[in-house]
Length: 199
Ligand code: GAR
Image 1 (cartoon, rainbow, N blue to C red):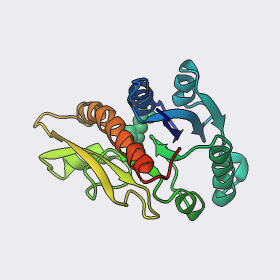
Image 2: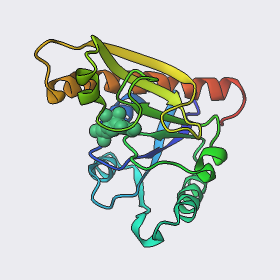
Image 3: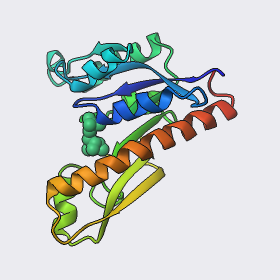
């Protein structure tokens, strides 16, 4: 089986990346991670990718001095040079411009740690607690220009417990992220292939 070629963009520790790498090891999983790109040279995700024998590219945003489009053109070039067919944002903590969003329309997924449309942006777990939510969770969605908007592909829910701290709630949500993202990425890859839009 030809697996759909996936590029992952990550800025931080890379636990979701790890979950995707683990899932992709199954022979019948329809996607393979061929490249990990980070804007952060110190990202744990880079070491995790290297441990797994996956190619990595650092495209540090700082030398671009605020030229977000030029930074994204460099990322886009790296994705295309690796023949990537589908992109997964996994803790990529930069707001995207139309350069990447348009280039990868219908081919780019994001995972967000809330039940969108509730709590887009940062500090989602504390905000769920402060809002008195009884349910919280995570969302995988297609990337469009609006931050943390875009058609939802899947969600996973957890109960918010009376004695939850931000940390305890984050840990339960993260465990769900690690199941939800591989499931959604696999579905997205299978759909691309079925539509004749992937190798
Ligand atoms: C995850 O919780 C992910 O949902 C979140 O960053 C974390 C990355 O963790 N993403 C966002 O907040 C994007 N808006 P990881 O590096 O261990 O996968």
